[in-house]
Length: 399
Image 1 (spheres, rainbow, N blue to C red):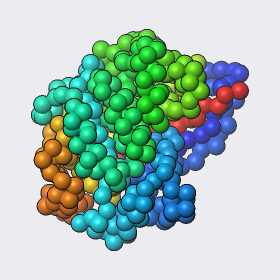
Image 2 (image 1 turned 60 degrees about the vertical axis):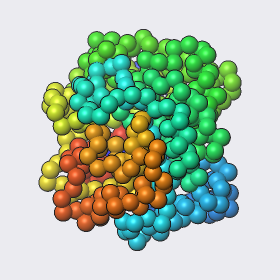
Image 3 (image 1 turned 90 degrees about the vertical axis):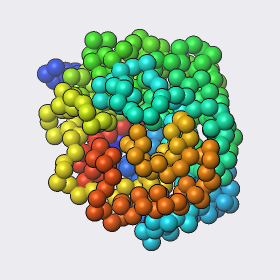
């Protein structure tokens, strides 16, 4: 379930129990999941066809954040239309190329988050940073059809110093870009300026507590002061260059150990100059973890998948595959080891990756689920979308 509401920086703050709530809020919640290109339904995508065809642009949101791909080539526009046709026909062999990619700049991270396969060291593949050669190969294989690039996966994206250059290259090709960070990097004015001038459209910054002791219960090894400095540096760089981007989204992953600080983190987001505050339910990212320690007891933020729920119609092997730092392509980021690789951009072309035997077999398992891959058991979207994943977004208005 993805929702957002408009929020303006309040004049008053009040408390209910142990939770701080902010007053002067416009309580207007609406669903935003349909605006996400990857999850967009056929009818919803059809409504965007006039703008796509006549204005050569495609506007959508990612976790409530605005993205826009401009000056789309004829090839990209036709590819998006083919993508819709493939979805309507429930094809396992695609006539389109992926309009979106999830790209892993790095599988390395300085933090040790207890539910992450990178932080716990449970990933079986070799960790590393994506080289510029590999990224250029991604653009060579998929770039002509690419509309959106999501620059994060397992690891901290900004641990790769080449990330701003990769984003800038994508921007030059008219590709909308989004990434996330734990805020331990981007600590100087020059680093922040480099991110702003890259053309990055949206950035999620993880702030899972308003005090160091609460923050580090999940972000083990993280420094909250560095996160605050990261957000302030970016907000300042945007202001100095009069740039509306990147759209800064302070994101709080809600656990049973930090829920009492939601109001405090919301106020912190406004003070630091963010454009949005959002909360998201904690996810089980690995099968071997103490999930019960963090999962919330109440249904409001509980994200434990329901084994009895029917599988969701997964869009990722059809619209948004993942490319790991070494060039390996998988149908879903949760195939983190991986068990079902589709190919590698270093050695394979687009057709052999996207319509090869492995890709078609995976899509058939999704379309006609008899026995789904093991990594589907970690899916946070299992069942009806929204029953296990909650995301609430509050754009921060400036008075």
